[in-house]
Image (cartoon, rainbow, N blue to C red; front, top):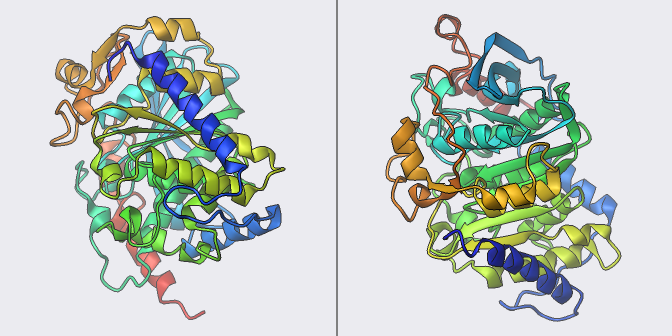
Length: 444
């Protein structure tokens, strides 16, 4: 994507939504020969949400956050400080996180970042999202998924520890359930901060993180703040049996959790549409994908797929539901592959519509110069996943160039080294596994 089509792409996204919204009111069989789903009542949707929460072994109620702060904040720029914290998740485990806080933040929006496969809070897109949107006046929360960085027994990145099947674990979906619960706890933490407006919180997920983010938003119960905006990049294509998310060779974090929700495939309803209908009750969703992303093209899930999906979501919500205004919008980057796009200009403009950044106007966003992600990474040394620095993937992402600095791995380490080494159990997959095995084999 080049800078000049920015506004055309925004208009196209809005037009696609409008057309799909109109189609959703027609009693027809949409493209792909998929029957329109039956309307579900609010009570029925809530029952499905509760059942899905239990199916993924997500705590209900969620545990107390019990946040802990380490050391003094670090000034990343004259106007942004970073804080090092942990918060609680399943079985007393702790989630290490970096918080990007604008100077003099008050009643500010917040954004939670859910990383893709092999990503963590040291990934370039997590760091850039933190710095970029903190510059806009938002508080940004980034954290490590289980098995990566400070939640890896070796403290490495791109370990993919959570992909390895755990001997004796019957319900592999427990791992994905933990990752979804982590995202929900991060949202709760964002809402708990005194400088955050709990009605202006966004959740942004990339790749595997897009899958966990839509589930975290769809299954958000009364303990969570209202998620004002959801941005999914490199995904969002919640499809049918034996397609991408079912056939994914990662049963712990992706295919296992999705298959555990098969009970949503009932009558003319389907998992993807039900999950988006649940999400639509609280706010809008933007889906950002490249037209050459293999995650999307493997099963030809380009715009016609999403037109079908929107029609089914609208049918589930019913013609009188106010939530129909929240059908997911799509924006396509021609020729782009798999990448995190929630830092691009179109994404920033959309987020500004939803969150109302204190420090930016649309005019300012439109005027920002752009830089290729690969060039910023080369300048700063911030980590990009192996093989993703190429033009078609993350390296070619055009992002606003605010001359943001890089952060070192030491600066992005939340827990002091001596404390972590003295007791890594609360942070790592190895520390979580005995609890999950005991729960899996407990007598009902």
